[in-house]
Amino acid sequence: MANPDGRPRDIEPYSVEDTIALGKELLEWATEETEEKRVSMNLFYSLKKMIPRKEWKSIVQRKEILPYYEAAQSALCHKIYSDTVKEGYGNRLLRLVQRDLIEEENEQSKFDAELKRGVQDAQQANLVDLLKAANSGKIKQENDQ
Image 1 (spheres, rainbow, N blue to C red):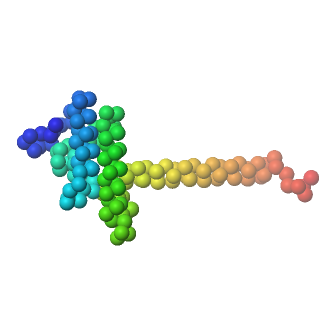
Image 2 (image 1 turned 120 degrees about the vertical axis):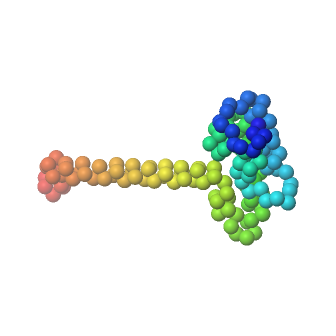
Image 3 (image 1 turned 120 degrees about the horizontal axis):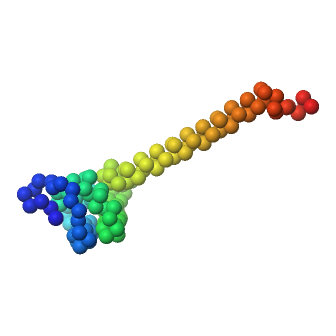
């Protein structure tokens, strides 16, 4: 799958068999006990397989690799957390080395901000409508009766 002369290849479609084989290799790599600190899938797809990030993001969306990818991600996260939690920076390290986690957290933060902005806009519009109604005389105060 990797280009033998070491140059990154253009994005090309993978067969189902190639995708499954890549997933199995990824999971084996992520769960293998080594002296090497494996903290990111970037080490696998970029350095070992010479797969560009854009292509990798496309590959991991395929249903054939998804179970392997998620299991490998969990295995790496467990290793990182187990190895670094004693020092107290495991959670921060996870965010620094796992690009997928960064993307998820950023998307969630953006969604939360947009939701909050929408609620604030709705409240502001509601208040403006109430003020307009009060100024036009459509709303009367209790002691105006």
